[in-house]
Length: 88
Image 1 (spheres, helix red, strand yellow):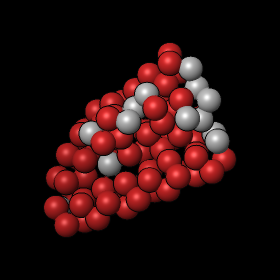
Image 2 (image 1 turned 30 degrees about the horizontal axis):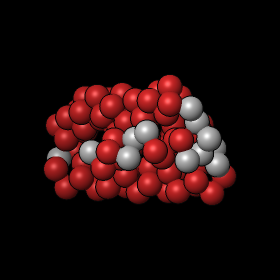
Image 3 (image 1 turned 120 degrees about the horizontal axis):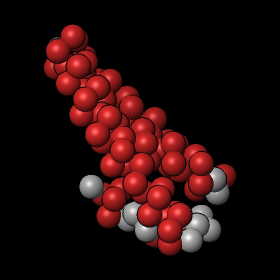
């Protein structure tokens, strides 16, 4: 929710126009849908504790990708970060 809240401003800070910014932040929602399906499947197979560990690890990777996108000023890296954060 926090990432979606800063949605437009974050990609624009990397030089994206308004349409591209909406496209980039849309990946959070795409990832969220994928994450709900995958998370449920993983929960059924591995249990709650392991699933929560995997989700936390994925979120950490997503946050690192978002930080890397700022350092490298890379929209594709930001898209990957949004997708991974959404999945988590």
